[in-house]
Length: 327
Ligand code: ZN
Image (tube, rainbow, N blue to C red; front, side, top):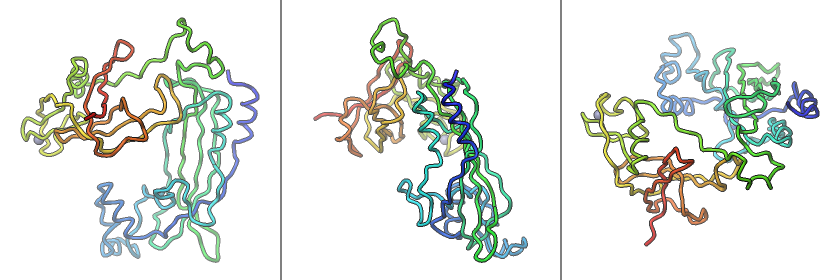
């Protein structure tokens, strides 16, 4: 059961409102076109002014699903336009965390639209803590679902701003299942305490060959038997020729570091932190995500040579990991 003090404080958060976050740019055609290209949206209402006029609009309109894009920070986190609030609308997560719920995962979002957004409109959103659930237990662990509502408005120069849509964003703030209690560090070493195990992969008919390969210390890559194109992660269809026919080849296990992240937080058992994770481009050309071992995180370098090795975890799961090649 949740600490009643926490429950009381959480309740006080519901309905709390936070200030405006502005869009850097007015709604504009280049951003719409690029978004459509990236998302593979080919509706001419968004890109062809003549077609849009024929449909009764003044010009192209923005795809509704793009609403959240306009007010995003950009590449630098928290880099919002002048006049935007500096409040943290997720501050309730810190409160919950203080009571021993360290992990967070985004659960789902819902977008609602009032109307199309037009070129030239200046948008902003505000935030409100819409709801916080009672303490719930899921497969991930025990915690609280926190839902933030973000209504989007079009700013009007002399007149009331008009609501154009709303985003609901829900996260789960939780104690991971099997996690050690934070105040029992001393007990961590006791043998009678069951250690957290790595999550097992979801194995399907399309991916089984890969995991079976790992058990035999072989790094397998799927190959289309019609056009010979390699693909990873495994999928039922060839992205190049759409054939369903495939087999798999054993990769050399050599590759280079294409990109990487070093996970620091939140710390979720049983992983060690900092936890370096690489996107490895294999010699055969496909890319694969895997843990990096034997690395000093300050010395990680894009393009460095890596070699696969297989590690067995919890006596039930063999995973490929990559280690820098030393000369
Ligand atoms: Zn093919």
